[in-house]
Image (cartoon, rainbow, N blue to C red; front, side):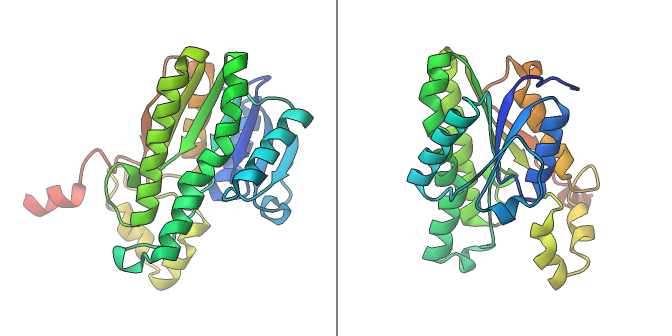
Length: 252
């Protein structure tokens, strides 16, 4: 996929996170000019990109203004990668009103707040690609109820864009990663140093996926190599949703 995005302008949200930093790197390696977005300058650190934007995804007006700034200063993007996400409420008992509303806002409403303003100008141009980073939690229940509900909504939103805007040359797909070893796992490892080994046993490939696995899938879905693909939810999960190894072992 080397240089498969040459000359393309790509916007990546959550660019300072564990997956986001790798996403930026892979899109640049594929030839894209990258606009990195996150909540603050500190969050983006020393990322070397064409343009940076700082705003709160939970604020629709701030998102609209960021979209306007991007178009006026850099141009209308060819690719939008909606990568920003967050979760901490891990079981139903831990999901209070605040946790539910916050996770829905960040993981679903925030994605819509930022991507929706680009739809009309992309339709007018006749092209555009959206890649939404959802989760296997959207496909089956693995805990994190509020996050799961939001990510399932994100898959539905991606399909809506694919179905209604395909006639305008716009493609839209979702990636559903399994557990990805980023700093988000640090608080779990502190509680149980053996948790990575325990989780790895659940995956047919014997290990969790990495940020580069997710980023490679995003580059593919954003590139001309996937020109005939739209409206899909692609698991990048080490086989987690393909079958249940512990169950098979239990009934042998």
